[in-house]
Length: 296
Image 1 (cartoon, one colour):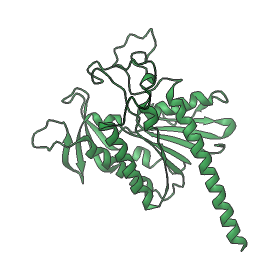
Image 2 (cartoon, helix red, strand yellow; image 1 turned 135 degrees about the vertical axis):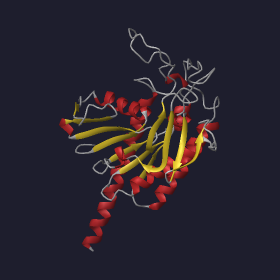
Image 3 (cartoon, one colour; image 1 turned 180 degrees about the vertical axis):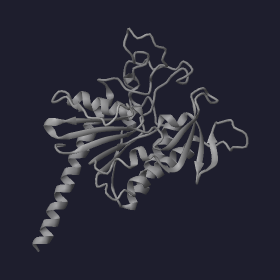
Image 4 (cartoon, one colour; image 1 turned 120 degrees about the vertical axis):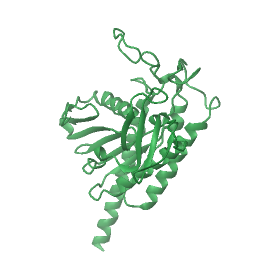
């Protein structure tokens, strides 16, 4: 179904996680060749030679132009400048030839940041800098999706389909990610054991609202790859403290953001497969309709 096609994942490391899941699943059929133009691990490209299928990944955790302002910052996790109305051209200029773009962002927005619009500081997220208004992280989150969709809608040569992969909640319990929080549950939640609330709900609703705005512009094809509720129910699917090789002597936070492979994230490939099938049927029907009009 993707013979002669190309697909790219654009966003943060959970997007990379999805791409790695897909590579693992496709390895039953074929292993890809690394054809990345550079050695930069933030921008990767693979080729499935027997299917002429290209898979790529662009790292852009904030989707917009950003710069690390302070490697430490008030919470010791870095302070970033986010230029909320400026495109991150490392990916926006590269998508024209792709048939499918899978877009995501989320977990980096809990970090401290200074927000810029029209090249001027408009506020920040817990930056603790003098004379700068503190804004909720949702302020920046909404605007980066608005900017990312505007970038896609403005690409004249891009004729592909953009899938917005919705926010996948983390599952830290008994503390935040940098305060000893962990995810040690061994079974999924039942549907009556948890609800989408708080920041998870806010992020999800912002994505839906900005997606609808971009869709209404009608310039490009946008589709919603909704993984939020499904992943909310899977606190058992994270690596926790096992996200590295046993012989590695490393100090890492418990990882309750990314997903084990194999694991629940593999279901996203099923969702995506179904949506690509639907897209193919829609395109086929449109072509039939067009050919019928020509015959008339």
